[in-house]
Length: 171
Image (cartoon, rainbow, N blue to C red):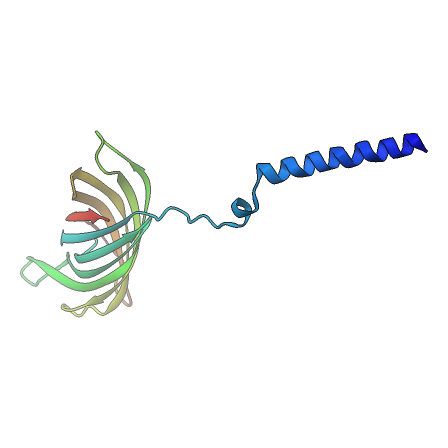
């Protein structure tokens, strides 16, 4: 019987030591507190020329919403001169594979999908997909080059280059 009591005493003290070590290693406050995740970077872009549009873009993390006017040359008039078609463009952009040159803000590839609404030359509702690269040149100055596909009902798909220039400010 003494051996049984000794074993129980030894088991109880080992259990108590293990339990007290677990409490010291992970206090209740740390286990129940909710740590806030770091806020993804935010950015406001003012786009001056064409890509994604002449307008504004708000970015949160890897995604951006954009809206503005989108000019493109996709047709010729009767005399053979290029005609500029104007669209209202609104959509979503996904940025990926960012990398930095010489310590600048990251330059990156992008994929974009947009709704477009034509203003002239008989253009109506459509969709525009765009893929390309945004190069952060200096401070907030960025240049974009890409290729877009314009989809409109009862019209052939139009593929054209999409250059752009803009200024972005992170906050």
